[in-house]
Figure 1 (cartoon, rainbow, N blue to C red):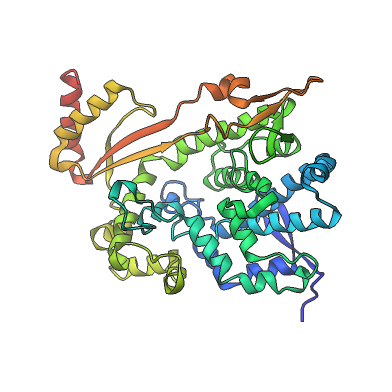
Figure 2: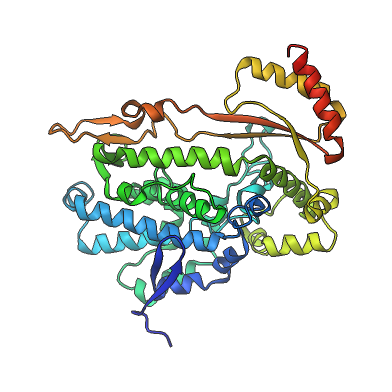
Length: 431
C-alpha cells in the first residue's frame, strides 16, 4: 500500500520537476486521465513541425504547476485581503489550493482525439432549437461530465481529502464557471482567463516542441506581478497585473498572436485539420461524437488518437483518410490578409467564383490575441493612488492588435497550376 503522504516528482521539459502528492497521483493513474497520453496537443502539426508530438497529458501536468505558482503568488501577497473579503482562514487556504490544483490538472480531461481539430464534430446541446440558435457541446462539458462521474470516487474518497471534503461537483462547477462555485469563482481566472495557467503553459510548451521562439515570454515575471483587485466587477475580487509587470502580460499576448499566425494557422497544418474533420465524420456514427452523458460518455472515452490512426491504417476514413495516410493533402491557392478589409472580401468572392469546382475547401482561421471590454486585464498603478486601468488603455501594443480573420482557399495538388492561373486572372483583372 502506498504512503498517502509521499510526494512524487515528474520530469517536465518546460518546468523541470513537477511535484504531485498521492491523491493527485491516483487521479493521474485513472483510465480517463491516462487517455490524455494518447491525444496529441497539436493534432497533425508534426507534419509541419516534426517535434510537435507532445500530448494533453504533459500539458495538463504543466497547467497544474503554473496554476499553483499563480495561486501561491496571490496567497502570499494578498492573504489579508482574502481573509477580509472572502473569509478564508488557514484551513481554507489549504483547501483552495487543492481545488485550484485539481481543477487545473483536469481542465482538459474531456478533449477529443487530436484536440481542437475535432471539436466541430461535437453534437449540438439542443437539437430542437433553430439551426442558427444551436450551440455545440465544448470539451469543457465533457471534462465536467468525466469529473462528476468517472473521477468522482477517486476525488472524494482519498484519505488526503478527509480534511478538505472537496467534491467533484466543486471542481466541475469551477471549470464551467458556474455560480454554484461561489467564492471559488475567483480562481477561474487562473484556469480560464486572459493570462491564465493554460495559456502560459501551452504557449511555452508548444514553442519548445515546434522549435520556434514565438511563444516564449517572461512568464515567471508575470506570475510575480499578479495583483488582486476589489470592485472591478461583480465577483468582488479580480485578478490583474501590476504596472511594473504589465510588459510581461504584453509578452504573453504577443506570443499568443505569433503562435496563432505562424504555427496554429500554418497553411499546411490547417489542410490536415480539414482532412481530419472529414475523415472523422466518416468514422463516427452519425458523423458526430457521442454526447457527454450516460452511455455516450463511455463511447466517447474510447475515442483517442490511437483509435483514429488505427482506423486510417485499416483504410477507413474515406478519401480524406487516404490523403492523411499518404500525405496527399490539399494545397492552399489563395488567402486573404490576416485582417481583411471590405475590398479584400470582395476579391475573395471573385477568386472563389473563378476557382469554381477546383475549390475543395474554404477555412476561416480566426482569433483575437486579446479580448477588449469586460474581460480586459486590470493594471494597478505603482503610484500611491493605486489607480486601476484596463490593459488596453495602458498598452499601445495591445491596443493596436487587430482580430485575425484570415480565409484560406484550398484545391487538390493536381489542380494547383490551373487554380493559380484562375486566381491570377482575377487579380490581374483589377479584382
